[in-house]
Image (cartoon, rainbow, N blue to C red; front, side, top):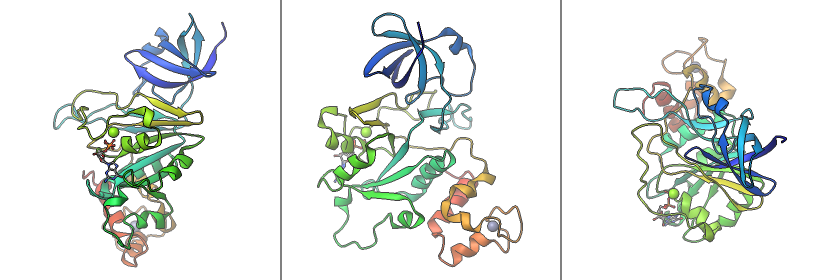
Length: 305
Ligand SMILES: Nc1nc2c(ncn2[C@@H]2O[C@H](COP(=O)(O)OP(=O)(O)O)[C@@H](O)[C@H]2O)c(=O)[nH]1
Ligand SMILES: [Mg+2]
Ligand SMILES: [Zn+2]
């Protein structure tokens, strides 16, 4: 039998549900693949695979096609003081990452938002920032809290599930793409998806049962397909978002607004922290780089959480 290509939309205990030609096939993994020891997850949602049909509705994955990009995180340490070794892939090959934060309750944490953004920049993944719960902001609060991100060039959408503001705009931005919704717990990710597609009936307002500490746990295992040309993964809340595999020397490039100043410091290479004649620090002093973003750079560089 010939191999067919498909998209992994769900994984569950050794079963991989592969969508191909409008149908979903329950696949297992070829033994040979399981033996290949790689420091990452073998098959995750979003993977494109080659599979062979066995019986009606069943198949075997023979090959995982190369990943274009992944959204991943370093799993939390198994015990305090221990370092987790393995990359935890949230999703392979997303077309965009929708980073959802709430503007109030819980309050906007720009340092955490910047970690998500750096992870996306490192993978060259397009980002949409959603500032949800805009209904909770006091009226005529002039400075939209995410303006600094709009100025950097990020696409920002202010939404409210309570009033319906920009919910249809969000649908438009999801169309024709594979997206992953990510962001802290309680910001309204599941509520946004339910507002668009009530039939999903995703649990809302629940304290996540996902424990951050502990062994390698699958963070998300389902790619929803609520409309023919929309794929979206909802992720449970993650208290930490530690960056995987980012070299401090590369970090500067993942802050898009720093790029015009790179290579222009007096001492090269420059870490843009203590060095005199630093073009980045000058840009911060001149108001061309936001001090909160510079502080994020410094914290991530220093591995401060
Ligand atoms: N006021 C207000 N509350 C919201 C909004 N969106 C979600 N919520 C509430 O925020 C809480 C967390 O929502 P949930 O969708 O579970 O967040 P998730 O953890 O990111 O999936 C729930 O109590 C929701 O009712 C919004 O736009 N405005
Ligand atoms: Mg949720
Ligand atoms: Zn510098």
